[in-house]
Image (cartoon, rainbow, N blue to C red; front, side):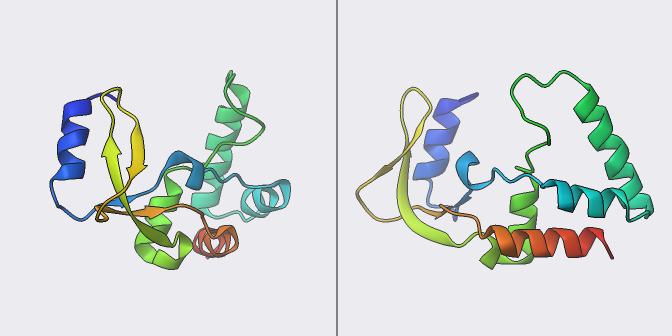
Length: 129
C-alpha cells in the first residue's frame, strides 16, 4: 500500500513471484517451544531470550503473549520450500492497494497454508544446534 502503482507494475511484469500473505505466515511459539529455546544456553538462544523479554515488557496492544514470526517463514521457505507449499494464482493489485485473486494465467506462486509442523521442526532444529 506504500506504493500501489509499483505493486501493480510488479504483478503485471512477468517476473517470477512467490507470495506469502500475512495469514499464511502467522506463527507463534508455544510455551514448550519458548522454554526449550530460553533454556538452551547458546549465545544465539540467550540473545533471543533477551529480545523476547524486551518485546514482552514493552506495550504491544496488537499482540498476544508471544511475537508472531512472520519474517521467519520466507527464510524457512528458502531453505525448504515444503514449509509453505505454493499454489499458482493470478494476483492483481487493486487501486486501493489490496491483492486479489482473479481469473487468468497465474502470475504468482502463493503460499496459502503453512506446514506448521515442518516449519517448527526446521526452526527449532536450527536454533538448538
